[in-house]
Image (cartoon, rainbow, N blue to C red; front, side, top):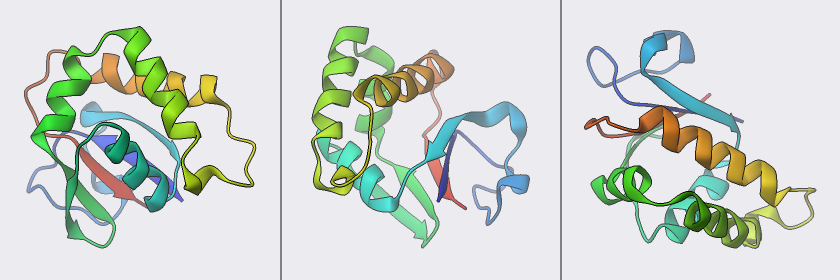
Length: 119
């Protein structure tokens, strides 16, 4: 399942990636909802489901992402790769760290909330 992280849509709702303004997309990848739930747990954060496929991440996730140093973010990726949703997969901790770093640097200096669309 494709998970797309973004900051805003015209009416803060969408059902398909084509509805997300390109300039608001922060990154994404092939992640399950369980993967993302476990990532949020590693950040001691949460989300609120707007629909089954559209989640609004907590303010604490956005604030932590924008202020965390790269080494700590890499450590979180290591913890994330140990979570149960990755069992029996060939997950690479370095790849997960890369996704998180990409997300962090795409989000830097934003004051918008982060959304995720599963498509």
